[in-house]
Length: 328
Image (cartoon, rainbow, N blue to C red; front, top):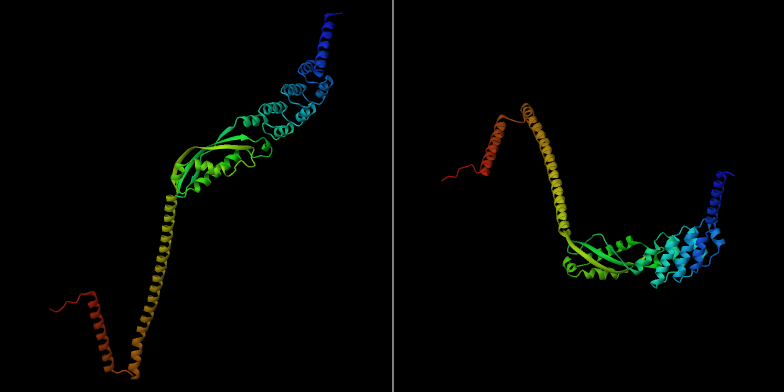
């Protein structure tokens, strides 16, 4: 036989041995055995066929067993097939057990499948987390704007992680409480003197209800004085009142101008009528002369009366102007 034949035989043996060890993880089975985890080779082989990595399940069983937890292989497989993170869940269970936190397996898997990091939640239950709020702007009753920053210390509420609101809701509620507390203050000086009043008012509202966190404390980190909103509003109101008054004055002026124009038009109309009537006087006098109703002496008498009337009007105008000299 040639050397090539022996090489083919060796390669075939290696391939068959690799396939055998892949489907029959003897090393993994032995590790579980010496760790006190009872699992058969047949179950490890079937895991391959069920598309479940045996190493993940066996490591989780070993970790749980060493920590004194009772975990079922079927439960771990089902959680993996559901898209969960088996190792994270087991880490969380072990941490909760060491910290005396009541965390059942079903709750841990539900939290994990809900998209939350269950291991981080357990750590936050042991070590509270500090959340810094964004600058919150509020105005006290005296119209002074205050800009407040707070630090919120929270602890994860394991029972509310599924369906509970997140950090954004907690921060929004804290901001709302700060605005309400400052807005109810008589003046900004009272807020600056006793900032702890804000925390007492906010904590009394129970802002962590329905959230995945428990608020331990709210600390005011900084308060800055902003604009005088009250004075600005008064100035804006005064400007608005001035503009309204100017608009009304302009409206009255326009109405007066329109009335004046109307009066001028009426005066011109009346003047035209007078001129027209005066133009008819000579015709009427001529007709009176022809008909004998007006004599020459009557005509001169009327002229004298008219001249006397014009003289009196002229004297009256001069007296009103103050141009007539007084006799000494």
